[in-house]
Image (cartoon, rainbow, N blue to C red; front, side, top):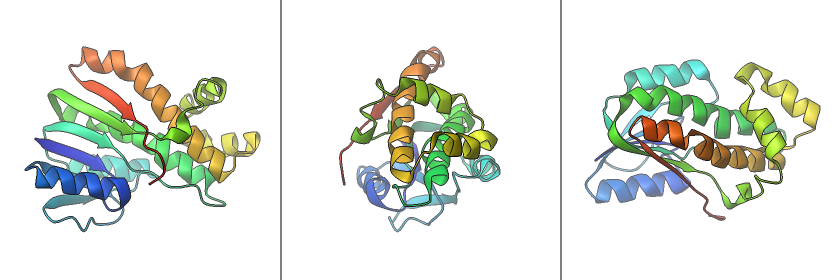
Length: 185
C-alpha cells in the first residue's frame, strides 16, 4: 500500500509512519521538517501556505491508496491564526489537492482529537470557519477573540465536521473517509 501522510516528522505522524513502514507499506511524509523514520520519502510542505501545498502535491507520486491527514500544531500563545491555518485550512486544501492522486478505493483518515468532541455545541462557529477562505482567517480570529486553545479545539471540531460533510462526496468518488480522535499523547 502507498500512503501519503501529513505531519510525519514527529508525534503521532512519526509513529504512524514507522508502523506503516514496518508493515511493508510505502510512505510519503509531507511536513516542514524531515522525518527521521527510515524508509519514508519526505516532501517539504508548509501547510500554512497554499502555494507550498500546491508545490508539494505537484512533487507527489501516486497513486496513493491512503491519505492520512495528521499534521497539526498544538495550542501556543499568540499562534491562534497559525493553528487554524495549519490544522484545518491547510489540511482541507491539502486533501482537496490530493484527491486526483488517490487510487480508486483509497481511504482518507483525518486525525482530529478528543478536543473536538464539542463540535455540536459549537456548530455555528465551526460552519463559520469552514466557510472562510485563507485570507479571511485573521479577521475571523480577531473578531471572535479566539485564543490559541480555542483555535486548536475549533480546528479539531471543524475537521470532524468536514469529515462528516464530505463523506458522501468521497464515497461518490470511490473513497472511504473517517476521522479519528485520539486523546493526549
